[in-house]
Image (cartoon, rainbow, N blue to C red; front, top):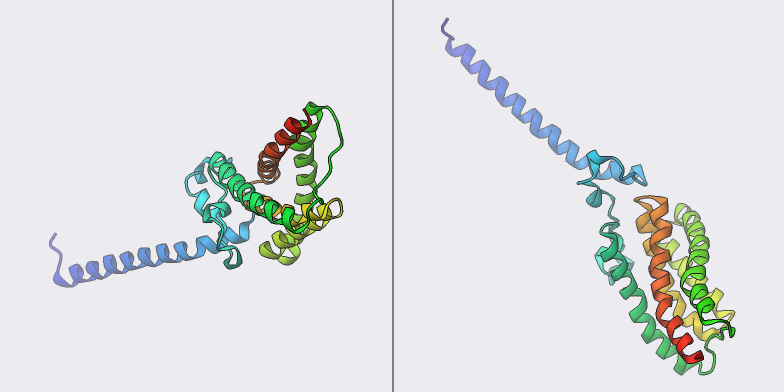
Length: 221
């Protein structure tokens, strides 16, 4: 049976309308997806259907106030690379701050008790990072909910700087910086899962303390 010109013309219109509808639906989905991701909060990576797209979806936009830091510091992906980057961001500026603090406040460095070298290494590299991260993370969860990301990490680093200054003023002038990095790492990895949020800063903090701990042990011996 032959199809008349009118029927063929109607078919062309139907196909054109369907194509436009598909394009519109795709554009709407692309615009809605990022907003929905921000509302979703922490995401469980155990879902294999979302494994590929997840790193882009849960990456934090680097805040303007912290734009001097590497963008990768706000992306909870590639854990080994993240630990290396965060450790470098925490440790290297700490050396500069330590040199400045020793000039401004000579003789006000922290004093550590004379204990067995193995115990001192455990206290500085394992015990302190674990306990301090548990405290820091709990406070950050509250601050982030109340004030948001940037105020939370700034208040956290300031608080830890003040707390360490009570033991040694020069210490507080240095310690606020690594705790800024630890706080950023916590809230960044919180978007993946809570265990990673606590675990990553513990590892970074332990590496941060490893060098000074070895120097103390070597000096004591």
